[in-house]
Length: 415
Image 1 (spheres, rainbow, N blue to C red):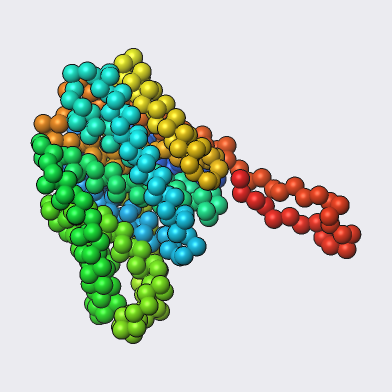
Image 2: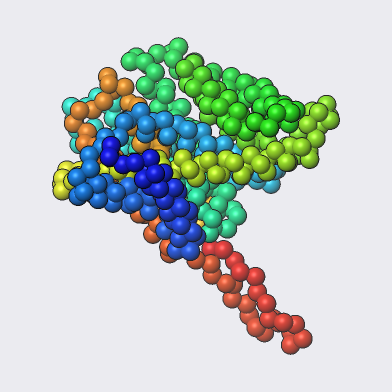
């Protein structure tokens, strides 16, 4: 790789961006997730480079950097895409319940599977690995729901966003110290309202910067501040992703604010203009980060793990457990249809990011990294199957109920 010229590198990077755009087009036409195509591209590039004799090493810090920035962008993008209205409270409540219940049950079940498969591993360490494997990836869900109706799309976006935030909070809590005490639990629970209160001040400060700032450089300054807030919150063990999500929600739902002094200082027109531009820049940035993260992750995947029977068996048991638990929850408690929500269980950016951040004292030496790759690829393929087989079905109308003078017209209904 060191023999490549600057022009060759520019050609490769820009070519990958163009290819990722084409994958997005293919996703809308065929419903094959663009993330799977990006992973496949990375794996193909790995074997092409080996065939051509190129050797390179991907620094783990690069994967973590892209993953962290991608996480912030994706959560902000989710906040800017969600509308909060009174009639949507049941939808938000059900998606939050789905995220937290499925995450908890899945984590405990996968931890039990790991404890059974790896009996020498401490149960707490198994729980940490299980949480990593139980978080639904919003980085994959968000760009893969465009073909769904509005209600299904919002439910899956809310659920994936909540799953990301709750999973990261649980992971940070379990990896913060070697002993879980009453004080640590109290700090964890108390940090949530603290983060919400701080979010209010941060939201208005960022809006002030966007609306009242006369310098043209605004939006990437805001992104830099969001990254500082995220990192600072993480250093203080605060769930700072809540702040980022709240900022997106406030900007996108400014019409719900009733306090007149704020309305006079931040007019609806100004905030709507900021929201439009912020959505555009956030979507572009998320697309760019997602492109290179998943291609680089694909480069790191060695398919040799498919020859390991233990990896295939353990990975299959975990995936089947995740699918079965989701089926049971949606079948018993969820009021929506099972299809295609059942199949939207992808693991991706958060799973990779947290896996490489597991502290040394909590790592399980006997856990094969191939299990992680298997779960990510399998759940992505399952989601693709659900997307491919989901289609609209027109409502059948009794023709005798239509008068001869009226045109026969029926509204399509989403199943």
